Figure: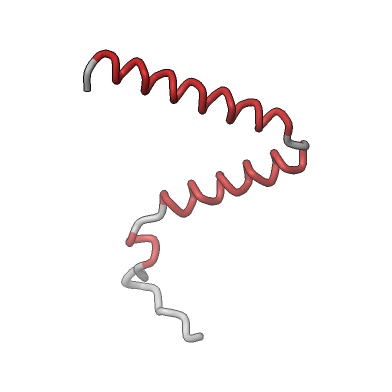
Length: 64
C-alpha cells in the first residue's frame, strides 16, 4: 500500500468509527445493555475450545 492509500484507509476507518460512536450514543440504555450482553455472549462462545465439548475420562456422555 502506498502512503496515500494508507492515509485514505485511515480516513475511512476514522469516519466509520465516528459514525459508529454517534449511532451508539443514540441508543437507549436498554438497547446498549442488550448489545453488550450479546457481545459478551459471543466472546464466551468464541473462547470455547474443542476440549470444552469433549467429555473427560471420568465423565459419561449424557443420554438425551
